[in-house]
Length: 202
Image 1 (cartoon, rainbow, N blue to C red):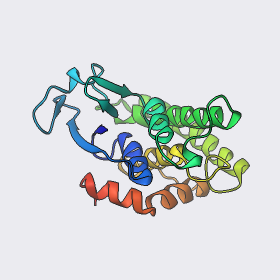
Image 2: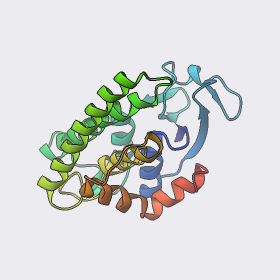
Image 3: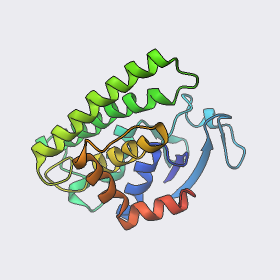
Image 4: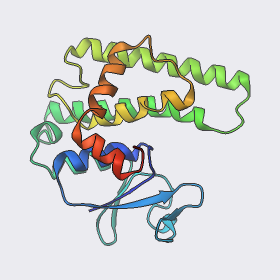
């Protein structure tokens, strides 16, 4: 497998899960501005939407979108928490949790747009606050410090990556201690530390 990523982007979650599972893989860095890979290839020929992550399973077969990429990686692993049996409630709860992460992703991601008017930024920050309250409530209801009862899953990795954008975006997370604890616990994992080093983030 080959993971196409941009350092610190949401593709970092797939990178963490690949390291967590120990599945053999290679990496392809992508410049999202130029839509080129580090080797100079046209990334739009790999993923026509130009976003990361993209996971090349075999030559000519590429998965995109976090919900597909993260679920696929989990299904190839021997880690039961990462691949609940299909057609079970646990499987659909995993998809639900990843989908919720994407809701939070959308709220945070909108703030990366350049030259936002102050009024628009205030509206977007209000949506981020709404989503962060939902994250905190989700974690409080679960009671185990993770997104799901099974413990560490793809949803934790993705949520931690999204929450890591708070600093660069100037978002104060001090009112969300459970969210902060989740973020810190994920990035304390050896798989996450390795992924950060491999992406040049540390």
